[in-house]
Length: 477
Image (tube, rainbow, N blue to C red; front, top):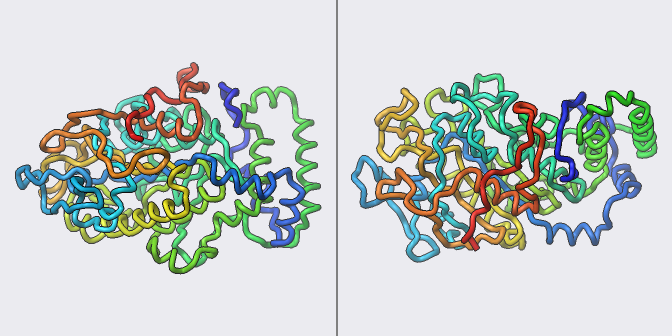
């Protein structure tokens, strides 16, 4: 996790296997034993931990897979012809002069807390490569022939933060929940979410599950079994001894993130009270959980708030819902019935959960130091029923449109109640202050205190690459 390590080589231990073998799954402890292990570890004092919680900058990256319709939600064009403006009406918000969709009433009343960046743009109309561009901040490396991850994918911002960032309170620098974005029926996750060509050993920690379920828990952090803390420490000493005896030829190729570093992370999480409590939603009052909404998305946002509060650095929240099995329009990919899907399903869930999330961060004093980013991989066509990429697009839907779309920004020094950038009269192209995925990535790195000019070794092209090619967005404060 040291930024001075600028190269990377292949690794013998996949990260998930190391977490399991290292400590998490077979070192089941009781609650008192966990406390004893934490006391034995070199963890910061509780006073220092509390200070770190309130002074560290963090980022929550919310990804609305499928591509939300910017022109129906955030960048409405009420003066445009009917086939462009659509069925929805704009409504006033808490900020005079700014309007958003009528089906986002709670968010409209929270407009003073966030910024509408209406000038995001790129040129990729295919889901996987477009997701890769937004997750990684880089133009896709090849032809748009697949939605699925490839070994030569650019590393995601989440993976780069995992390697070059830092966590606190026993938490890793980068956490993804509640899953890696993926199309139903495909055997691989969507492109651009992992370490890719930098190396899969730098993947973020993925909390795969449904936080809205009553039986949700993060495997390995719960109290179970009868293994004493003394046995845990003896096992850790044994593993350290084995590591020191490994063949030097193996060590030379183990890369900057070694088996021992994964081991340290696993023990850090296991031995940290704050890390274990961060994932325990049962500690939240029922009223708070209801406020967020008892959906997978809502409870994921609540979990993200708890992680940030406990010292987490970057938390990625990927949208997931029961529409994943729809062949034409899963998630925010509204190729048919665009308006009823938004009105009856997507908008109510997002409006309830995201407005609660912003209010909660604000009330707890976390919004000032936490940058919140909400985006999809692209927007939707200005004209209803317009065909651009997907032949299944019907007269009731909107197709993919990467040339201009909206990103929501809040906190982290971003002034709420403003609009940044603009599109033309039909919402089709950027007319002012264009922002690229690279610019957004650089802004996130800047927020996390990571130098975007740092370099890593690109195993695919056999050269060094900068973390970000864009520049941090100016004029947001």
